[in-house]
Image (cartoon, rainbow, N blue to C red; front, side, top):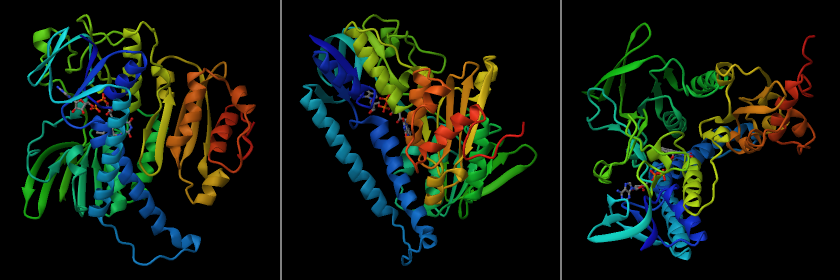
Length: 460
Ligand code: FAD
């Protein structure tokens, strides 16, 4: 009998397998496609590889101002795609090796639950003490006429394109939609983003999402908020899209339309119905705080349970679930989960937004600092953006929001501050090296007391 069968080899499942092996469990991991799951094969890694390409293009296009002249800049997406595929293959091999080294048995096939002690894969029936479902998520469809017309793609499919579409329309102004918008804009597409909500990235602090809108427009991306797509049809020269806006009807043409309007859990073929595993109204698996489902011995983690659908959250939940099986009680620090958006400029946040603090009736103060006043950002020629810090009445930092260069790296300091309930004075005692982008975080924190050094004094 196995100690644990894990279904799904994404960042939830494979990380859980390694942690379970460290705890001495005998594990089988079942993956029906490729190890690494969405994150490695169709998500984080392929998009960040393309983001790197886009960054290089961006730097080359403005290198003249640094006195560097290069010839005619050409971009070959076939070559970029080959590089992306090689990077993915390399990282998949790395995970395979790690699982081997940890003596995790990996089976390639589709898992089906028989009951809380038995999992079937192909002809093999595996008897186990515990089951961990980490089957992830997939792109959600949209109830719009015309989404099956060729040229209408989801996020998996757009990563397979071997040409840059001259006109790209993206339905959905959330994280995935905007990352592709920034990338393909720099690859050379004319990009339009259509969002049904009244603002982009509607879970973010509204000041940051308003700035995002400004920067996207500055980069030449057309953005329509409060606009509901109604129909897609084939046109003589590509695709035609009709949407209802706040006042007018929007009609636009595209070569490719990307559907980027959410994700849905993957539970097909698991046989959850027969086993009696409870789901939420939206089809995600319901669990308690230890990731146990209503059926004893069956756990679930990651995108398939909903919540913050991020790779690092799936991994943390996987670790917490197997530690619970091993008798260790550890909870995931959901209040300080950092989230990053790899747009141009990048966005990263942790903790509460100003709107959340207001909803919770928390008295708060804010501190802000613009990258335009940060010397390192000036040397880089990347001055768009700001750091915004939110502190409670006792000056404990409860939220850090960054839009600007390297925001995804800078948020680590914010995560430590929020996770450890640190206060303004903790940071003021911490010397930041000069010249660095991190000084903008320190200045934003100083600004909570009106003591930022590189800001004009506040009027008393
Ligand atoms: P998944 O990664 O989806 O893995 C689930 C695995 O289970 C899959 O490999 C699937 O084949 C397998 N499976 C399903 N059913 C069965 C079955 N019956 N039998 C066997 N195997 C099965 N997150 C970030 O943190 N940072 C990012 O930058 C980021 N960028 C993203 C970009 C895009 C375009 C997308 C789509 C997502 C991005 N994400 C990002 C989200 C991240 O990819 C997911 O949150 C993460 O992959 C979830 O991990 P998981 O292990 O729960 O599921």
